[in-house]
Length: 78
Image 1 (cartoon, rainbow, N blue to C red):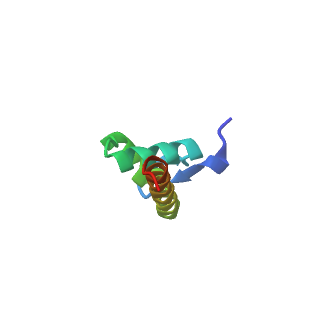
Image 2 (cartoon, helix red, strand yellow):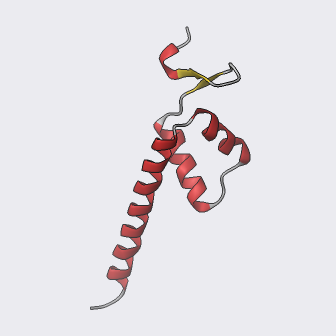
């Protein structure tokens, strides 16, 4: 039985699954590294929400910068 809550209909009438947390995180991570495939990028634009990717991208960026600052402070002596 199809889960109707997890599907949306795009402009062409095709049904597409909403993206889960794992797909969103992997898409943001792959895009940040520059290794996002065109197939996944198209999937993101068709079934993903713009706001979700903005928030996930900002969180990833903040965590990345925080991680770099932490590593630098641990490596560089005071």
